[in-house]
Image (cartoon, rainbow, N blue to C red):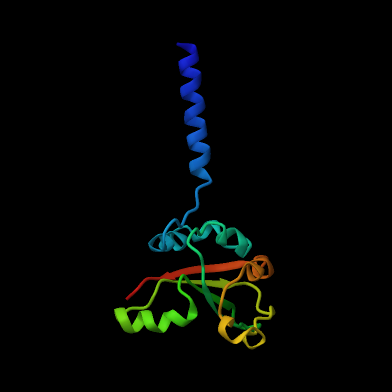
Length: 143
């Protein structure tokens, strides 16, 4: 009986531990969880938020800031070339994750990238911009 109790306790601990490490956003439609739980990300590096997203982020729009205005990064789960097509076919906007950043002096210049990859989000981007600090999180669903 003691062995059975220990085995059940161990299984419970393992299940609890693994469920805590599960990513917050398992599907595109889970993206709203980021906004609901934004207090967990505000003031932390962007990389901590990105680790919570399982679906691949495919494209990005960066709105540079200034000393008076915060910078914003908008993530999409669609390639940039498909966003307009999605809007035309569905009459809706795709899911968008808007992240306001405390820093405004980072460089994002799509003109320095290959023409067909100007707005692609890459692993290199994740490394380079992952250090930036999250100031706010908003998610916009198809409307």
